Length: 266
Image (cartoon, rainbow, N blue to C red; front, side, top):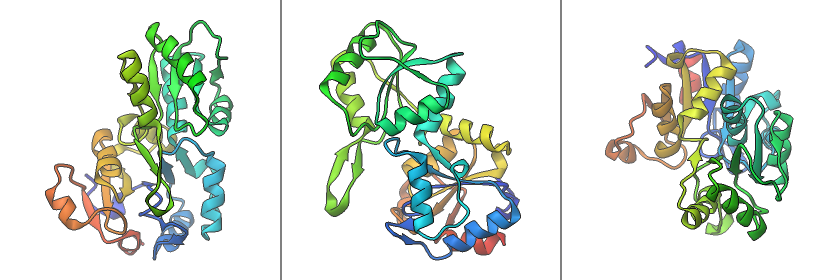
């Protein structure tokens, strides 16, 4: 654990509930990001959602009034998957069930995507695929049953929509494939250590000076614990102090919001 918040050299921010609530920035978030930019302290925005492109998140942050944010500050579970695959295989050739945005993202990072009639692959990779079909399921099941490694971008079961609605997310798609094949996937993204491995490789900062900031214990703070970095819980989103008191997953710091973080490090 860092001796103090001012010792931290890199920040990884969850977005909704931490930096913004829907279309409204959380008080102090713009000041904090501007301060980090001025001091040239590395920071990243992380999302487990692999269905949208990183560029879409850049556009969202700009729309919310965060200036100077580029692609290099956005990390998705798709980025983590690409890093994971390139560490496992020298030239990864995979069968992907994912959105066109995820396919483009993986190709840009040197991952070869195989057609549905491929006899084999280095891996089957499942993302949060809003274009998922029984054709994709059939190909994935065939390859997984034949012994091809089964990987997935994120463990989320649902993606929330407005008015309490939701979509089945990557974890639910994988549950179907696991039920059909008897093979469980290897997940990356939050809360798994592969997310931290990717961030540390990208930022070049030591674990004890790198912090995950978020409003969920079971994803954000669990990521910090699993990856050996500093966990900062904020009470501006999903969790309360009572939740923290009752949980086995304990943050290194608990703050009311990122405004308190800004006031502590400036």
